[in-house]
Image (cartoon, rainbow, N blue to C red; front, side, top):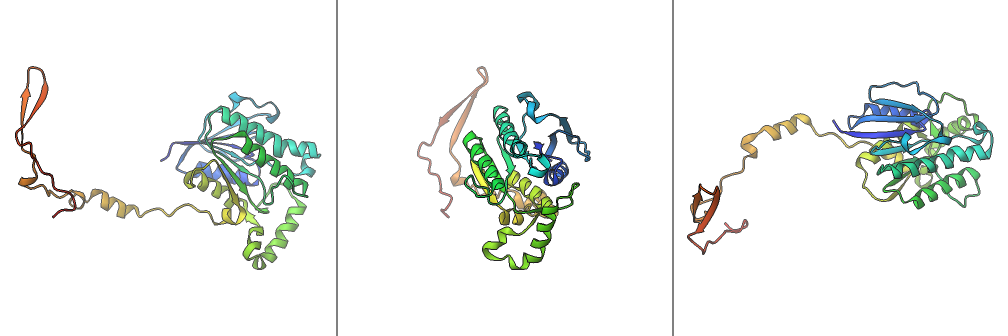
Length: 281
């Protein structure tokens, strides 16, 4: 059983919902805190929910955790305007990252998008690219950027464009090989699992970007055979170090104990003591 704590923002979306469930079921985590504008349907003994308005989020709203998982994201149609879209996809994640840095959270994992680039001709990718750039400039202790392709899964809301794209990519999947493999649609549950794998097992470095094809391949390491492990641990005869010290190898010392002062004094009788090297026979 581990002793890790996690904070999740964007927990009511497609990926965030799966992420919270997987974190709660993972033995490495004892505490999962969700900061959201509405209560998620999922409940668990490890889960704590803080209902907050992201416009007025303060440092005290974020306690220390080992990881901050950011799954915030929307669409222009749902947001109602570009200004509101940027607030959810850019301003909120950046502000939360800044608060997390002040609270000493060592690792932030954030979902952006495949093709995120400040200079992209596509508005959505420009916003995501700008977020990545500003998060890097913030100087977080560790930042993991997750760039999935089209996310698929059972959404609570219907998104016509994504449903069409999902069907197209499903039929085109056999043709998406080589460099095109990164464009394959990816299950939101796999993205959530990959984020946990990255948090627990990936090499620690200041900034790492994970493209969609790499996210799709990430999985937990295989567990060792517990019975074999127990056998090795409790096989005392096998693990006991052999007594290879001979008479000639022992140091010739007379130890005199001064019991009045409770100190141990050593008098070396044989000053020319020769020690065998480990590789000598």
